[in-house]
Length: 131
Ligand SMILES: [Zn+2]
Image (cartoon, rainbow, N blue to C red):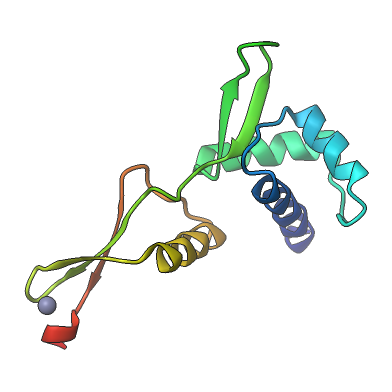
């Protein structure tokens, strides 16, 4: 049961990631996903609704009201600008992680079921000089 749920969740995140410039209502997500031949494990509208609320709570997606039709729209939370810093626990120096590595770290955080904080991520490490 839980594996089944994860597959649907993954395909939903995958869909939002491949349309990351756009926001969708639940109905649009279901319609777009069912027209895409490449997506297996098509979730039902109620499943999409439940999963989106779940992902909104954990910060994976953003929900807001579309000013034109007053409907809720969802998009993948943009975490690209959130910096990932490494702070050395010995000397206290702070190093910023490059954006590719940062993106990998953030996606690992999300896949562990946690969410990326809004301001920054700080990893406590032992730096090159103090190793
Ligand atoms: Zn150090």
